[in-house]
Length: 364
Image 1 (spheres, helix red, strand yellow):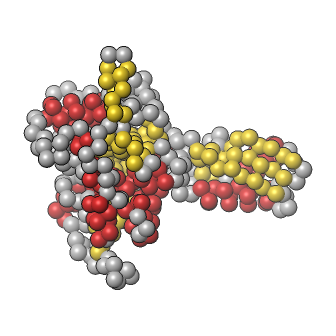
Image 2 (cartoon, helix red, strand yellow):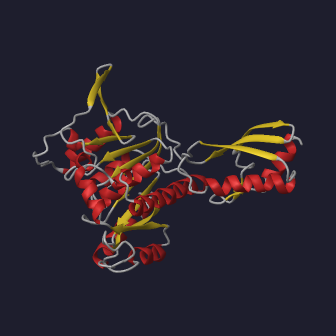
Image 3 (cartoon, one colour):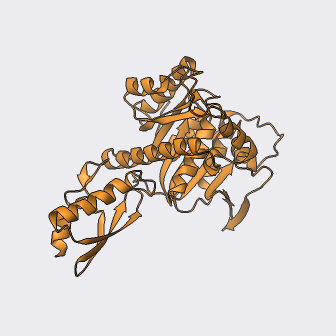
């Protein structure tokens, strides 16, 4: 049994999302052969890869079929998150992927999805940050139970750098951490945009696989500021099945598809897909309509990332500072884990198949 035999066998294992074998993709490392035993490492494209078991089983089967059925196979799975960033990384130098979570209108649960998506990505081992860019309606301090807490400031030369708070294993920043809770943010667009630039340039985010950005509803100044400041990996669109929400979600999709912006849409999430009472966990009531988000995704040919039910515990957890992903509610945890897996796959496919997003230059 030689290393060439192992590589030839593993050349038959296809990475499902990228459509190429794991040897060509340079995912196989550190092959060690000791008698009838072979060990090696498979480097996944993200720690949140939902197909890790499929790839691992494929490797074992390939060795047994093409090398020997009695070979003892020991596989270690690790990850090196893919990134499409090709800019000089003066801003957010340690951040591999920037995911904007957007909605065409308010009230569809965008912040809830952003918070739990970030937590679900982190649960699988990714390094994650969550930026609350909803300047006029910040919700991260409440949803993460950090109301009244203030981030530290460190001096770097003559400049003050903000150290984000950390909770449940992810880094957090929000305007709600920098102003009094009862203070209304009465700012014109340029001031709000300036705050977003500060969250990007003056916050020590460190090394992150994913920076999830909870954007304000609609399409406006802050969205333009973001894409003009850093290259956004892609956008996740949140909607409900309700026709009025779907109409606004179309506008969000259309915004990112514009020729002068051209940020890939990673996919669409349908929130509040059905209502399930706690006392009747098997029942589904389609209060806002059925499968509207799925049909919209098909119409615009974007990936459908998943459905999240309308469950009372999601609302209660957000209000109490205990997001659904850190609760013991398996229904909602599973929904958000599936969403994170779909999003991580979409990011990996986007990075492998589409050219890097560039900072947008809009000439008026």
